[in-house]
Image 1: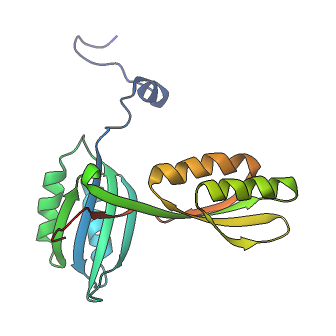
Image 2 (image 1 turned 135 degrees about the vertical axis):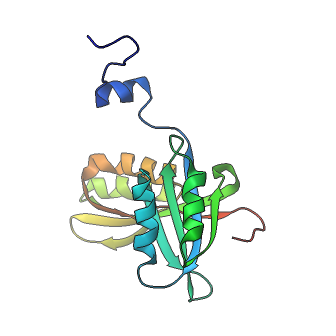
Amino acid sequence: MGDPGTKEILSLAELEAAGNFRTGRKHIVSILAENKPGVLARVAGLFSRRGFNINTLAVGPTDDPAFSRFTITLDGAVHSIDQVTKQLHKLVNVLKIRDLEPEETLARELALFKVAADGAARGEVMQICEIFRAQIVDVSKRAVVAQVTGTQEKVDAFEALVRPFGLIEMARTGEIAIARGRSET
């Protein structure tokens, strides 16, 4: 028995059952940076050193090829996101940082699913694709590849429905996001 006031060590299963495992505050961080070698490593390293687990990371060029937009999603209520953004501003190649509010943000993800589908199963998989407005991008004798675009929840729901048919392979991009309406970042 420990000293008074010390807490017992909880297992991972106990934390998940109690609902304390996730912090509950989803952050979508949008970063505009110069498109130079090493910037991605420095940005990701800064989050890592601060103890943040990056859930998704998407990087791509902007309308100006000299700049890239990073969209990082993470669960960060335990840690102060403000401290990380202040340190990100100190990085030479980082120009703008914005912690987007999920309610005021349009976020989408792209996923490719290769699903076992022959005979009668093929028709069922194609019906699911139609419901989710997924595109069939490849068909073979034993499998179908579907492309799904939408919110993380939509992609998760699609995965849950096609998994029983036999999910052969899956690739997801992670979320990209942009603020609704007019904004600077």
